[in-house]
Image 1 (cartoon, rainbow, N blue to C red):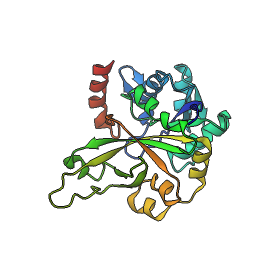
Image 2: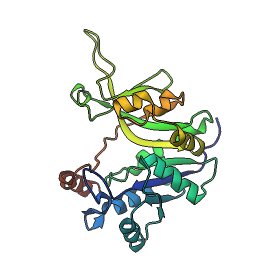
Image 3: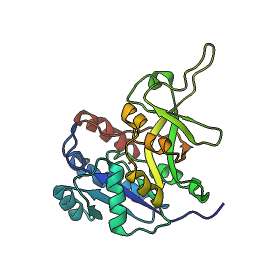
Image 4: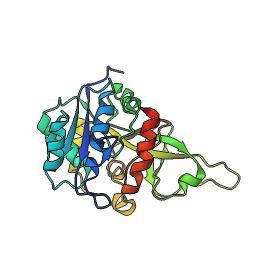
Length: 247
């Protein structure tokens, strides 16, 4: 085992969301959502720096007004991971660093969850890490809740929208729900964004399957954190109420 490499957080934020255009700028408790995500991420002492990465001048202007460091990126990225990779390149982050891709629509983010992604990187063999939590059979039945199966060493075997593993007759279900936060070594992030979409990735519409299809191990860290993301306008009130409880 070696010491932990330096770690940095990048928050991808695009304006043109199909379900919720302008989502990063929606006001929650008097501030835009991206400000809450950034402020909570900065409370994680394991991160040496945190930046917003966006393709939109309105978001850049709002970030400047609120003293949130932001990196302008291309509008043509197919995913948040590609935007994070471009920001890391523009910032010239150290080649040996770990980059945490922080979801820009989780204003109730717990900073301790970000820190929990990093200890696996004391092992030089670990290239990518993510999180999973125990979920009920009822949650596992929902296609919008992504499930993951891990091996005896805590590495992902498969992610699916189906309720995996299937419990044989008489067996109690034991499902893990994927929590969509990732940490990458910088070289692993670059390789991931350069790989073509895989067959399973296209089938399930889960980009993390690209890693498994190309033999890149993904370490899964157990946690109890549940995502409270803002996907649609109707989610704002519930997340705002949750944030009131944790402020």
